[in-house]
Image (cartoon, rainbow, N blue to C red; front, side, top):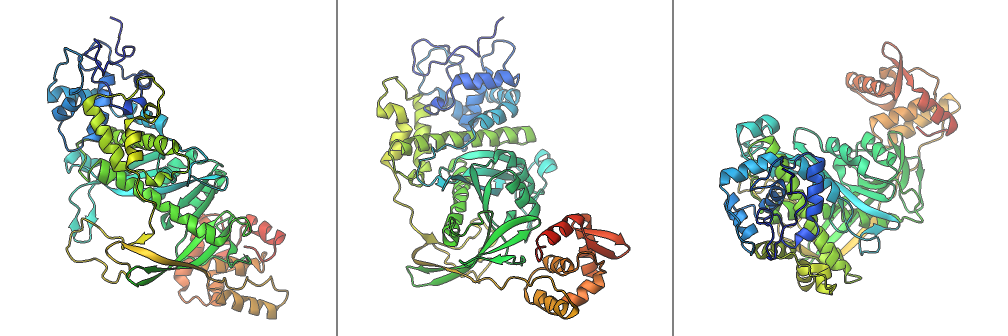
Length: 558
């Protein structure tokens, strides 16, 4: 028998359609996820049923997506939502076991493939807040608050988290996304156990980064190798680095920023103090240290880049919408790895569909910032359209037909312009009723910012040039000591003064005033393993050939 499930189109508006395929819809969101796309992905992943079923695979995909739209409802209640507005006769109500088997038969692979098709930038280049100069701004960040059921199969994959006061109540998934900051649409996503680092997951998303993008990220992504891998994609970046790092200073720019090397990557570092005054009269100060590949201080002023870095927080708003608005903070349903993967891919698809509808709405009114679109309004309207089985298209070409009912609701409920506010970051569902950090200076309740001042901190003097005699060598070592740089950069500056000399860890430690010789010797061993130094004998090192070439070509640069 020839399979018809991949060719018949559901009739959600009545008119004698196929009763078996009729529940295969997502209300008005079906316009962003047409049945032809679902059928093509199912066929490509060999997930189309081999015989005519009462629950075809296409219906299974839309049912799984509907589960993400109604996370607090059981299988049969969600099925009733899908079929409540259908006028097609002969629609049977399956059992919960049949719906569970439907989920298992579809599996996670088609949902992952669907997300990869839908993922990507949503906004046009002319949309407000999407670009900085010619680059589209995107951000990396991870979320480790995705709770899954505490059962044996989930623990075998994810383990359990040991918190400060004991074991966490649920195993957790770590979700890593690459987000378009202007629209908060997802360009890519990966997830897995929390035992792996954020940068490990972020590396899997680097192939999605290209030269048209400017990457924003916080201090968790400032490792030298990750910065080098990001720059190798051709993209620019503005990434905050930790205050513990003391990079060597190659040149001081007129605006107070300075050029340095992180690993072998040449970057520009901006040190600044942000002073905020709240409406309650409280004054707050915070130090920011930003590393960027935008080296020209004239075309990219330091203050402009500091303000641009604040756009990184848009990915936090994306996670809030995904975890607390769409999922309502609930634990996922599935009790095995395949079910969890399927469920999370479905959530990401639904999130992306809603963002697409919101971006279409705001772009129909030129000059409207996507920040003003309400995710809650879009979500609740989409849920209503599912119950009514309303696809929202009649071919008339009217404005309401172009943006849809969801878009009209978003435009009618636009939020006010973004207000500058600040508050303490705290765990909302902590294990103790007492604040974990009573010394936190920021207010626990959100306060409006009435004044904001950016003060650029002047950089120390650049390091001295390579010496020619013993006296100059002594002065250079004193200069290196006073730089305040980390052990690695200070070591390379010292060794670059005499590129052909071999050094023992004790000699370097004495010259730099380092007291713990054993620990420093271990550090030099690691640097040799990384290829930054060359070990020529037991406990004896010299600069690697690459560092020597750099030093001889550019004296004073390590």
